Amino acid sequence: MLSSKSSRKRSSFKFLAVIPVVGLLVALFSFDMAPTSAPDLNALDAATPDMPLEAISSGLNAPLQPIHVVVDTPPPPPLLQKGEVFKVVDIMPRFGDCQQEESWERKKCSDRNIIKFISNNIKYPEEARKNGVEGMAVIRFVVNKDGRLSDFQLLRDPGMGCGDEAMRVSKLMSDWKPGSHEGKTVRVQFTFPVRFKLADPEPAETPLEGGQK
Image (cartoon, rainbow, N blue to C red; front, side, top):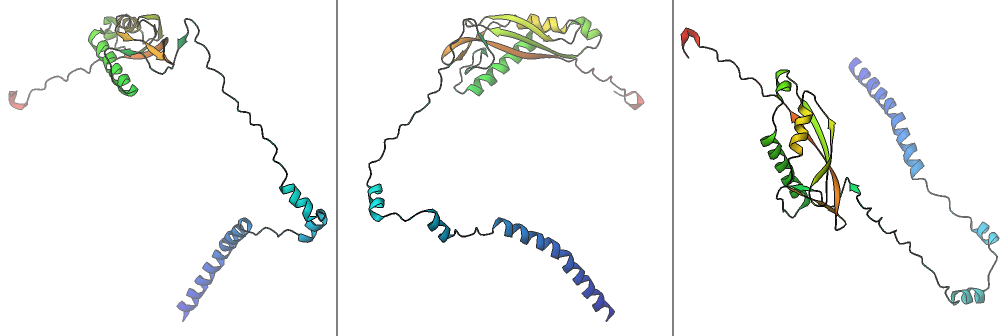
């Protein structure tokens, strides 16, 4: 008997707790879905005087007025300035023989060639090796219309000769295809990093127990 009374109290409490939530939802939906009031026909009749049918028919048969449409044409693209250097172009410069049709494939091929060239020609500076210097050097240069490189800049230098070594190897790269923009060969600025990292020392060989190797 007592259990039934307590269960009734709990159920009534749950019902009371749900009422505010349901009430809020109903209020929201009623606000969004409330029908708009119908127009007052008497007010419309008072605001617009009666018009004879002849006037209405003559208005319908009146000749249409011509409509003039003006279309704004976009301005022509700016002319390329002599010696102008671009950062982003339609076709970026490529290093090595990359003749793929898709632009992303040509870029991937060029990146592989750059990594291979740097790896084969870079020499870790002895001073940096002795002092355990590691880091990233960032080189910037311009690929000219004939594929030659110029305007070299060292943007980041880990020190101990790493920046100078990255600059030296960058100046050795000569097999570049120039970039183009809007069908014309242009000068393009190019930036890439060279990371210096020492190889992890090999662990010393530990003899097995009992003098066995």
